[in-house]
View (cartoon, rainbow, N blue to C red):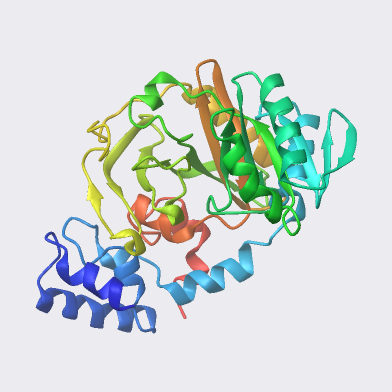
Length: 342
């Protein structure tokens, strides 16, 4: 908390203290809570949007409980991959899995006794992979934690980290995603995914796309997750271009970025490829599941797009920051209206 307060007070682009106090009091009255969300949504900064349009944390928690049911098929990456495959939805291929120290590769199971055994099978995986590397992540993880990109240059080091983790974590071992040069131009150390939010009308079954954003790694990170220090930028779904500034969460400093801090590429107005294809894939995938709102993580490759994950509980604070608040949004103001009061 003290670190967060330091970030707030030291921000060069923050509002004046009297302005912040006035808005904080008004937020508390509007949302009937201690308005910590005012800071987590970076509303203390200039050009952060109209604070009146933002839903408070207490109401967001109620919204999660009422409308965002956790579904095993979406939460478990192995089950999710099976469903996508059955429905011909493009995804990154799973090469192997583990159940504890049982390693399953090419439909053959073997027990790993030590890190040397793991190194041996990892080298076989790397040798058979398309791009001489393998991406490893927990099958039920989130936030980019315990994710590893393994190739021949680091396999000896990383198996010493992975092996003890396998006692408690089941991983999936995937083909590394080859990213489009247009995306690599901004940041090439991680797969920088789109987060596209789909809404299924419970009465008609029609799929809408209320909002979208794009996430980027920074500083050499191999993951784009904002909770791991990355940044995100809103995506104008109609124009299919990045819009406005990049943002990091308050816990990572709460910064605004006109340009990516590593490549110096300007975010605002940056055009992306494959609009029609990506929206068609998201709408097709969203029809499979009963959830009203799903956050889809989409990777952009040189030859098309891939579904990385489907999130039954997408980060609503991030979505709200990217779209300028739910209360004034053309879709969210309609579908979440019951939660704006009380």
